[in-house]
Length: 196
Image 1 (cartoon, rainbow, N blue to C red):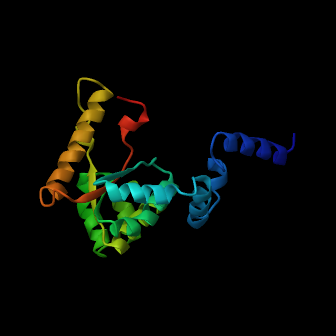
Image 2: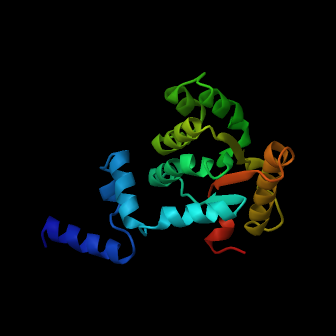
Image 3: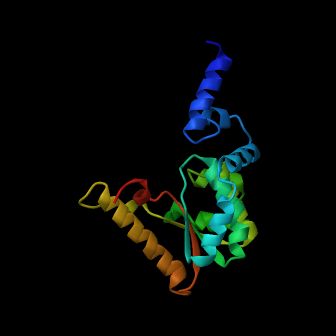
């Protein structure tokens, strides 16, 4: 079997699984090419559907997978449109101890390189997301905490404690001042991975 035949068969298998390209193929693409590819893979009306739901909701959760920059690019591209629908706050899955670093970046006090040195997961996608939030005038809060992983149940305790702490952090930072505030959450929510 030739290399091109293997590639076609592998591509077909991935396509049948619901994806248009494998990780190997997307690793060679630029961020702009990844965004274009991901938009083609999605239902054409996905963005429109999300924006319609956002108009009717106070909180919009955009799920993400770590190290998949396309998730950050997709969310980043939505921020300006969400701002026009009343969303002024973005909560990201990043330990709250990094809030001063995020604030410095958004204020223009540090650059991309300095942010990447301070924050372990500040890859191209995350930098893009923060830049788009800055351009849209959306406040960004680090809402995660690694000190919440305690509980009698190794899995469920983590999920419950983590989600409760995320809510309390948002409550203090956002909802106490404005109970009607609209918030975008961008994180992996373990409850949505088949856990109850």
